[in-house]
Length: 383
Image (cartoon, rainbow, N blue to C red; front, top):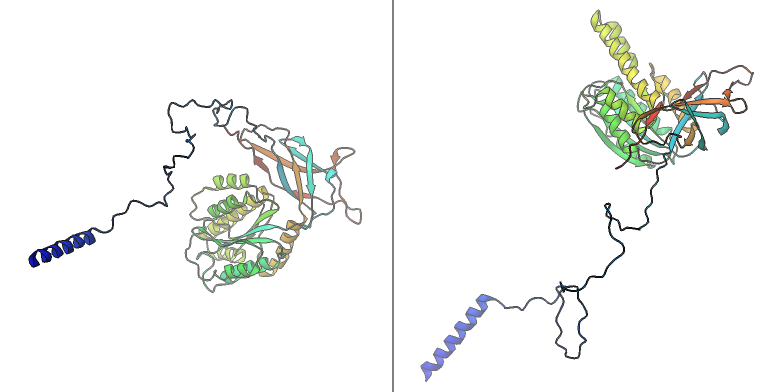
């Protein structure tokens, strides 16, 4: 009997050990979102027939069409194109002419007059992107051009109003966003403080301008690109023609300021023979490229030889940005064919429809220069 009790205790311990090794046996969690069956005989019968494949489907009068929308559902579509122009009217000294009323302007699209539907001018806040060339080609550490580039960048930022939005992009081999659009000038100062040691000798101007324009084209309101550059492009993925068309499509005014003008002119004069001629030709080509980008977008180009000219240039850029007239119209040609349409803005006498004669305080005629973008590319019809 004693041996039988001991055997029973052993078997019991062996069973507990096996159960502990297997772990607890659960019946599943009740927290899973899962429909539970009821065992209440008094519960009402379920009326859910969605799982019955033989259940009759409820007919709907709204059947989807080829676009995936129900037939008869209301749809809305806007087919009206609207074009906005920033127009600068300058006298023969480059100073803006203010207080020109709306009826004095005439817009020609492919030589066809257009009806102006919107007109504004004033001190509205601007959205500006400062694009700075900072490569080892012209901005070697502690050189004169390095110091002038930084002084020019800091100088332009100081001319902005507190409510203006500013972003800063530096480029060499590729563009880099140093600071995004903000009214915080401390962020702009911190961004410019990163421009100390150039990394590469490449200066890919075309890629940088297209990169900037694509990121600004959907921004509403008055906007512009201020470019501090030598105008030289060394290794861009885009060609000049492709970059030019992309910049035209973006339609953002570019105010270009040439760097290292005096140094490059001296290099051309000091090099004998073909070396000097090539240096002079490179300077002329790079300046012409920046001038093309500026004039075709409704901006301006400046090529200072001396550092003392910069304050006056900043003042002219500031006046141009603040004194532009914003004109809006709906083209008479609403065809969405993707073609390029040329634009021209004129000042006319509304009574005679003839060119307007502008005179100064002494009643002397003034030669007026009207600066705006050369045209735009019409959108294509979306299939």
